[in-house]
Length: 311
Image (cartoon, rainbow, N blue to C red; front, side, top):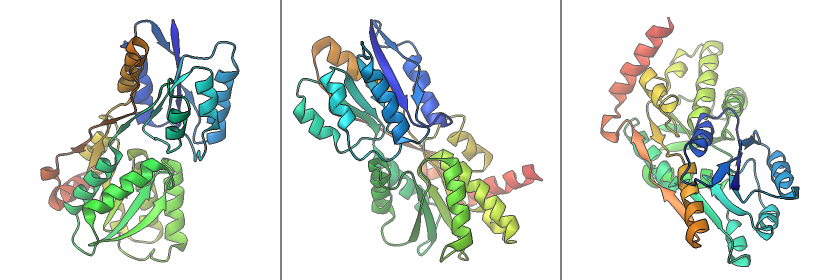
């Protein structure tokens, strides 16, 4: 029986928990076993140690599904894996250096499965334009700012909103805790900290949780109650997280990203069954709620209802 290692980033991220569940469900690979996920909790070094642990084994796994953690600028470990005939599929965060390994190991499988990241950013931009007026001040909270995923989503966002808004950036590193810390620091020392924030756009829903905590705290500390009701947009869109946050009035909108592990297992099935080497598989994303339902008055009502529930 073939074995498949699953290396993810954040233990507490619900989207990544979904990836693990989907990978462990009835597999499209009846003669393969998906191993229990190993999380790096934001550290590229921790993830590299996990990879090396697998590669040092006398019988390494037949494949690795990897969501990169931290800022991994080089992929020496990838070539070591391919040299040991381990197929590697990157999930969601696709490094630019994977292409060089594909050329060096033409018979090996090096592939990526990801939501259409630029489209996710474009949808966030379109959602934003349903909520704000020209000249608005928008805070864009990215994942690890230098990661290809964050860059592609940011590019899509600016494609949609154009030059009609003022945007400031914070790096939330995909984490609620890091986002809360970054936004709290901005309120303390940011050059524009006294400005009214018309909208906050977070590149995942977990960061939106941290941003909402920082806003609530600053609203009390600075006697600026309007901060607690700042509209916010997220991304990931899990039923029990992002979509529920929209229904509860914590988010004005989110973007639903599909789980990538089922498609990655299908890539492996085709490769092991017939030798077909996929390259990049991009999955469609969608707005929640639909764009036509995103309106300032609707957000105002959701926010007011949420405030009443808190009192």
